[in-house]
Image (tube, rainbow, N blue to C red; front, top):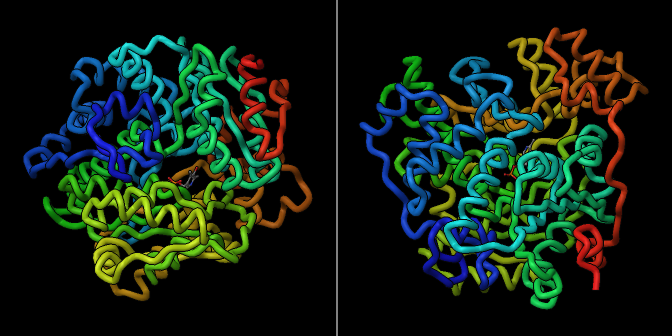
Amino acid sequence: MISTRGAGGVAPSEAILRGIAPDGGLYVPERFPHFKQEDMLSLVRMDYRQRAVFVLGRFLTDFTQDEISAAVRSAYAERFDCGEIAPLAAIGKNTYALELFHGPTLAFKDMALQLLPRLMTMSAKKNGETRTITILVATSGDTGKAALEGFLDVPGTECCVFYPEEGVSAAQKLQMVTTGGSNTHVIAVKGNFDDAQSGVKRLFSDKTFADALKGRVLSSANSINFGRLVPQIVYYFSAYADLLARGEIEMGEEVNFCVPTGNFGDILAADYAKKSGLPVGRLICASNENNVLTDFIETGCYDISNRPFYKTITPSMDILISSNLERLLFDLSGRDGMYVAKLMQALAQDGRYTITNQMKAAMQKDYAAGFVNQEGVQAEIRRMWQEEHYLMDTHTAVASAVLRAYREKTGDTRKSVVVSTASPYKFGASVLEAISDEGKGADDFDCCRMLAEKTGMAFPEQIRMLPELPIRHKASCMPEDMKAAVKQAVGAES
Ligand SMILES: *Cc1c(COP(=O)(O)O)cnc(C)c1O
């Protein structure tokens, strides 16, 4: 693995253990594996776990097949509420929903975060690391709970989550602050997601902080960690294999993926699948009102200076600084670490950067982009419920609406997969409001109950029982005090 800012030469296990490269860059594969048509044919005959072992093995080159197999078997097991793990639903002409919300916390983050802790402890062993691994997480809502559940009571690890105090849904917040376990810490940050993410990145590069955490080593469970990305590559291959298995596509036929995007991790995994040989047409990057990525993909200029931050009904996408874009920039620039470092410096200093016309042209060959506002999201949920009897969460609806607009604009008729990232019950009040006016004034949980009655779709227990659980995490801090908050949480005060 090499860093997007030039440093190089570590094995995948070390990249996973470190989380972020010492030069501040992100780890990427030195070269991509290549999946041939016969590999794709083998995938068709496999179940999700076997597909995961097959795909992960080609990326995690210093793990044995047995290790990967053991990690996959325990990650994708009974905590998922459906045996297919990542089922593909037909939701209209040439359109499918890749449902990634069947894991324990009901969001797609489980796909990676049920596996990452297992890869992390194996990586520690491989690298002779005996200190406690302290995982620092910044969350816009869903990563936090998924990381807490993934690392819950995993020996040799502790997990410390920062979430924006006013920036997550009621269910998301309760999911986090009611977490049990002896190694979990949850802290509210008085700021937005970008404040929390920047704060965590600062802690990673703070040498005195690392020294103060005696007997511990820091790592990340955010999608800056390559160990978060690889498990996400699997489900793009799996969706393609399912389409082949059902005779919906011919071998080699290109398929589009439309992805509701925040930190650019999910869509980048699709990009990596394409670079590894998956026949992907367009990657459609779907955003909400925080549409910095739409502008970037259309103009080649990434600009957050003077850009307002909107709080929306798709909180997991309320992000202006999309960390994983750095990995795309690295490939677009011909893997020029110096150039990427310069862009990142410009972003930090001036709040903007512009890529070359050549890079922009290359990007637009692979990517399209669009955004939709709150009314558009609710109209899409309503339309899909009425026309297809398919209930979507707000984030998935962003992608569905953006795909619709993309098709109208381009006339692209290729089969397209909408990546469905959360259960509608995670955002029950907004979803109910879209299809009915019964929920006015009711709290999130009453809305979920009404939603279940109205749609007949089961109300998942993980959300249903939340109001009964004791609140176990009450800490909060200012963004500039995150260092002290971590020390206090893990008991490393000097
Ligand atoms: C995290 C998240 C996203 C955004 O994914 P990124 O990998 O950050 O782009 C979209 N929808 C939901 C429900 C999420 O939890």
